Image 1: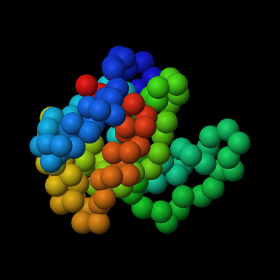
Image 2: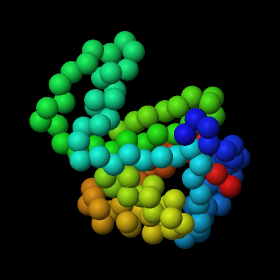
Image 3: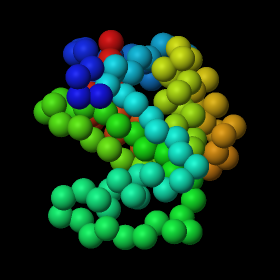
Image 4: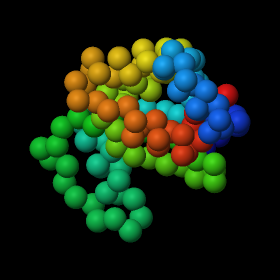
Amino acid sequence: AYHAADCTPLSPAALHALAATGGNGAIRLHPSVQVVVSDHPAFTIWQTHQPGQTPCSATGQGAECALILRDPALQLAVQRISRGGAAMIGALQAGATLLDAASTAAACDVGHEPAPLLATLFQAGALVA
């Protein structure tokens, strides 16, 4: 993710224009966007072994997904996301429209709400023109 190509982030005006399409417009993700889908608590294990953290046992915890990307300050960001979020990002990376990607996420995770994930991606400059 750190060495991914640079891209111009989507401007607020372009995002507004995309919203006007009712979610039927195409959207691309920054090349640094990666998703890790694991049957194990990989994110928790990684997070608790970062500098300044106290390692803990992840025994008994289930599957986890993580979003990895490079933000505009060239810092790597890693955060836990839901299975629906992982499915939505995968669909966007495969070329789906925003509406279709949200439908894919909802099919994978009935309670998935796309707005927080989209806000995270936008704030990180991961939605590109």
